Image (cartoon, rainbow, N blue to C red; front, side, top):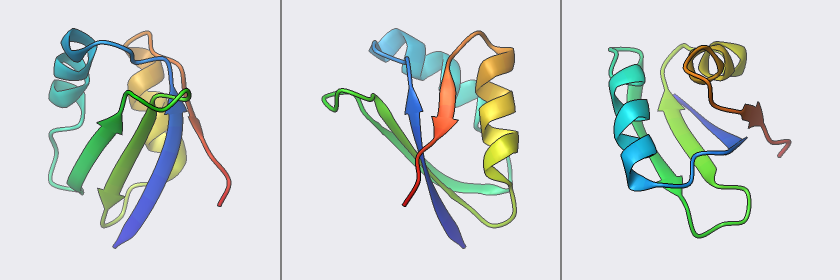
Length: 70
């Protein structure tokens, strides 16, 4: 199990709802947004997805998503 942290441009709860549909898959154990953070942080707990896959999923829906370094 791995926790990945991403900077995003998701700012509104309406956008979070759109992302929820994208992140509903067996390989994702859990996820959450911190919209109060200046980087609109997305944390994803996964049992096998790469950070690039998460970035690709959000980017394909028109969102900015970039993994943050530890």
